[in-house]
Length: 273
Figure 1 (tube, one colour):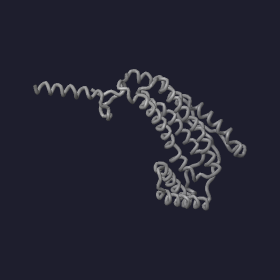
Figure 2 (cartoon, helix red, strand yellow; figure 1 turned 180 degrees about the horizontal axis):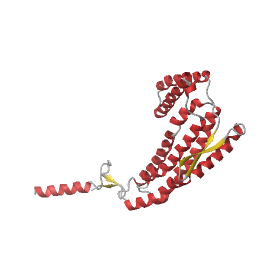
Figure 3 (spheres, one colour; figure 1 turned 180 degrees about the vertical axis):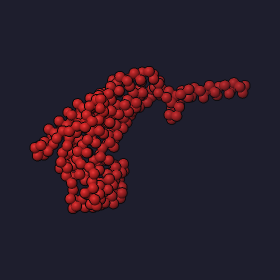
């Protein structure tokens, strides 16, 4: 009799694992590793290869577009397209060389004072936008360091607008190369239609390129026409960090959509045996 009760209890426990879904510790996604590798090789990798094989043409066209957009704001001949070697068998990388604007002592002091006031006031603001204010605080700290540098030793500032221009291009090529790989590894194993996955990959890749070009034009205009004092913020706060924000944001929306669509489908979210 006790043996029958024990066997019945074991059977009930085993059956309950198929329906109790209150946590995800033992759940796994169904799917074929072979299918994932096929999709990764034929959908994600080609976008990365497109970047690395055609970056000379891509960067050259970006520079031509940037020069056409910025020409009305500069004297004739002050914008020049240069190139430097990157990956020798493939070709050079192109970038814009332009005049830079160094801040005066008064302008640097003004920026430092405003930054200090912001760092004092922001922590005392009590609202629901804490993540945003943390990001703004990070920007202010970076800008304070930059402002103090131009106050103390402005003559030793080691970078030019051309240095920033070529560094930005190198940074964007790296981002455009890794975005399809990272997003491919993140979304291709998920239980979604193949066309939705392809659309998401292509969308984030195209968005990254368009956003990168618009940002390049705007940043060059700022460091040349406003001041080089903002180079720190543009690189450390509004550079690659912003790229990770829209990448993770897109992934979050994708996963949220898939979770809502398949949340009650027990054939998708299975218990691991």
